[in-house]
Every structure is written in structure tokens, then in C-alpha cells.
Image (tube, rainbow, N blue to C red; front, top):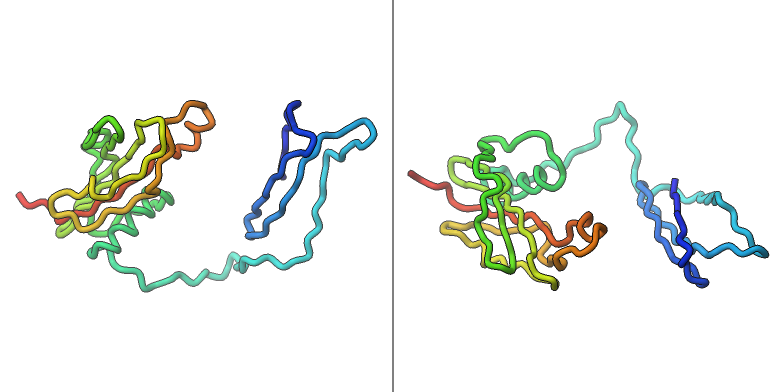
Amino acid sequence: HLIVFAQPSLPPEGEALIVHLNDKRTYALRILPATDIDARDDFVTIIDDRPPEVEEVAPDQKKEQPRDFAPPTVVSGLMREMILLAEFGKSKGIPGYRRSTRYAGETVLDDGTISARIKEIYMGPDLWGYVLDVENLLDTNQKINPATFRLDGARAVSAERWDLAPRPLTAEQKITNAHKANVYVITRAKRN
């Protein structure tokens, strides 16, 4: 269901909407203001006989999983696992790594333009992975410089997004969180 609440300021030429469905089909709609002569329907039915582009799997069938991913003992595998946990809500931890939130919230960078705080640390025998919450403190767009996060022994730096929106001024901007991003840093394990 798509529910549209039109505002009185809807322009005469209307507004365009693009609707994306879960089965990957897309529809473009134009919402026009109703007039006394040309009243509009409040319900619209779209009949589409196109087959879905996504292959549906019966509940009793197992969907084939891709297999050839790098293990978390190598840099690319650890990076993949950290991204799955932080951005996609993977529920299991990373095999062979201890997750620590002991330093969560601790600021590791605050230069007046950007702020970075630790979210989590994954400690393994050879590699450590850091998930940082990075926030733009400026009123303009800003690109994240990966070199900023090169620690001693750094092996890789990745980010949820490299371009950060300006500091939010409205509730809508704040909800989008486009001024924040997760940054992932992998280093050699710290030896005591």
C-alpha cells in the first residue's frame, strides 16, 4: 500500500513519485491536485502482468548460498564480516574474534570538522577490526579522507559512505543520518 498525504501547496503540475516494490519492479506515478470538475480517485489499482524479476523460493527449498568468501582470518574476510554486522544486522559474531564495546563512545578524532567515536572493536589473533561512528561537524558536504584513519599497522580502511552531508538543520535531515557513516579500520593485532 502507498498512502500519499497531499499538502495544500501541491503545485498544479503535480508531484512525481517512484515506487519500488520488493520484487524489483518500479512504477512512476504523478500526483495531481483534484479539482471540482476533475475529481480524483482515492484508490488506484495497478495491474501488471509482468513476471517478477526476483526468483521466488518455496519455504521448504533452501536458497543456495554463495560459498567462496574469504575467511575472517584475512583482511577482506574480516572487513566483510564487520560490514555485515554493523550495517546489515548479522546476528552471529565473527568466528575467532572477540567483540569488545569497552571503549564504545570514546572519541578517537575530533578536529572541528569531523568527529569519530569507537562503536566496537573485534580482536583476533592476527587482526583487529575497529568500527567507528564518523560525523560531519560542518555545514557543508565533506568527503571522508581514508588517510585520516590510517593507524600504525593499518591494513585496510572502508566506509559505509565516503561523502557526508552537512550537519542536519531539520528533523528530516537528522532522520536520514546522511551526515554520519560507519568507518571500518583493520590493523595488525596489538601485541603486549
